[in-house]
Length: 404
Image (cartoon, rainbow, N blue to C red; front, side, top):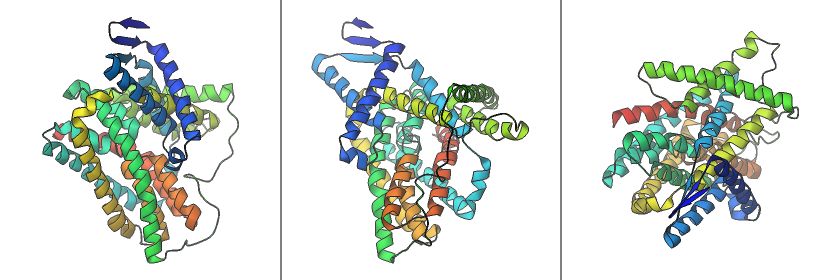
């Protein structure tokens, strides 16, 4: 650790250590705050924002800037997105049928609207169009992970030096707005049209019924690590092939593709190989990678760089919220059948548009626990927001960057 004048440099080891501490602090605060629990604010978001606020106080009060070495964070990002690819089964995509195709199509069209809205607000305030894109699918539908992953590209190639802060700010407040939008819309629709569940049965708290997993031991952990590394290796190859064809994608996207390819070929070609998809070991690696990655990213934010953009960011988020709410209420509900399942799907769609997969699940869980189960919603919504969106968004971001 080096302290020169008013700059405090933290190396990669201390940065990772602080990231873990920040994660624990966020968990401790959530356990003691009903508000944070009710709105499903993630632990690294709470701890990371608190630390970034403390950093801002040090900056304004003592003219002290803390600089973190975030090299290890980028590795964690690639690890996390690779686990998503390794858990993807193409057979699951067929099970959703026509409703899945309709919701996916509507979501993709909305993604264009979200980006166009961001570009319009940026133009209104005379800002670079890339700022509007950061306030579109990069941070809202993409969430914290996508915002953090693409921010270095916006900074280095387009000169948006505070891209990280803009993206994370939009993603964080979008998460809160998504949590407050989906549930109330579903409640309104259910009460207005007197909607009832189509059948009985247990509640779906996730994308699929709970499955029994063998406990994670050192062999299962090593299998998961090996599968991740093989997928990332394939991701490097895909990245170079696509780059030679003129399509530049971050490694985390091509590593996700690599995971999908291996997860849907190796078990079929080599059925005797114990493949780690959807195992406790892979889930543990994914959770640790995402949690520490987000904590490190959020705690390193320099919030003082956003002061001049407070007005545009607030305007952008209000506009995105109103458009998402109107689309959910008047379009998605009708497209999905105007029934109880459609109302629950609307709760989840609210989480997709401005928040995350976790927000969508939380919104739908709250609705179904009060009014009754909706198995269809818990099949198609996670498939759309946890599988397709990251892939579509990567190409859409690239398309808009090339067009503006």
